[in-house]
Length: 156
Image (cartoon, rainbow, N blue to C red; front, side):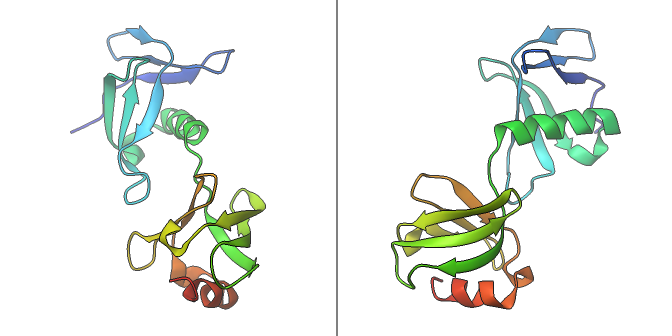
């Protein structure tokens, strides 16, 4: 099944609009991933301001490059799930504790309230929620440096 031709772009005010293959324009559109962690490049919906689905994109890689770039920009603006690249230090080996981390969006710290705030999604994928409800993703535990894995092992 091929994805229909469409346009997705941002206006001067920063709002996304969608123009269907029939030429119908919809304002204040949002892009939403169905499975942001497990399958981030599959199953993306474009929704209107009321939450009604305008378009279903089966696989992002099937889109033309220019449209793909805009869809990814729209997704990035809506989503905020920094990836933890390195765990530099922890204030304590029991929770609550503060983690000093390096993420794909820069260095920061997070307050871990309890071990239950670390969810294992698969053998290598972890989701860490800080005290403010911000979710941090560890995409591949095996790819982290030895020091980070050693610290994480204390909490898992």
